[in-house]
Length: 159
Image: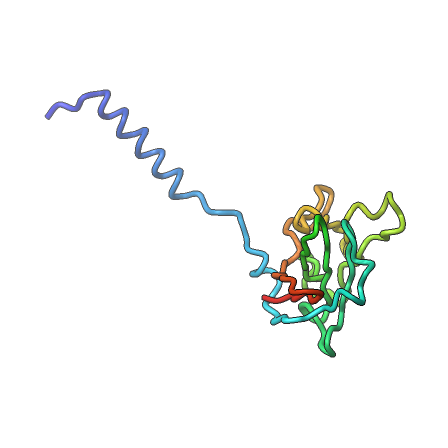
């Protein structure tokens, strides 16, 4: 039986390609696997929160008498271009810490940058980029996000 050298070469190239594709594992991790599930269904009356303007954020730890977020860490509501986004205030690097991520000072233009910082590990998350951590952060995953919808003056945050 004679084996054509070009067919053998194609076989080894194809075989190597298959092995490399099949052996690669995905490094992507769902933030929902990092921050455990916590049911949230909160209604925020925007009439009372007129300071929630474009490119601003607010922290909420209780709404309607219930604590919010994983371990009661609270949530951030961020508004930009008329859209509302909500994030859990639990650091994705120090999930079990008692402290929560805190909003940077919005009155300090240098510090604000639409960010929030973990007081434990120092990771900074930029809310305007989907609460992704900065490159200098220890955390490598964004803050857990929640769904939002607006009906009239009521903002609903839920999962």
